Amino acid sequence: MSDAVARGSRWLVETQNEDGGWGGSRGTPPSIEETALAVEALAATLAGADGTRQARSAVERGAAWLDRKSTRLNSSHM
Image 1 (cartoon, rainbow, N blue to C red):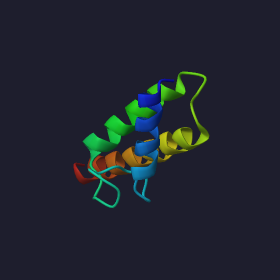
Image 2 (tube, one colour; image 1 turned 120 degrees about the horizontal axis):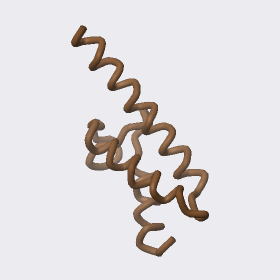
Image 3 (cartoon, one colour; image 1 turned 180 degrees about the horizontal axis):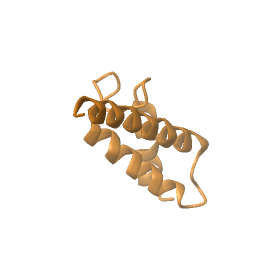
Image 4 (cartoon, rainbow, N blue to C red; image 1 turned 90 degrees about the vertical axis):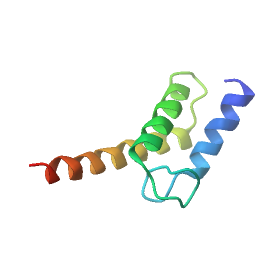
């Protein structure tokens, strides 16, 4: 993993909100778009042998946040 990718991954892990989502910075309300992009970026780093435990945990928490959000959106349209 390049140094730039490692720094970016660390930044994403450090800026993830407690609820699992991502906003523009830590503590900013999360959005579906920003969370999906962060999950996608971190998941790409996991494909290599250098994926970290923190990145894997962040991906799992982010995916769970997206799942909860989409469940709420789907139930409100029924």
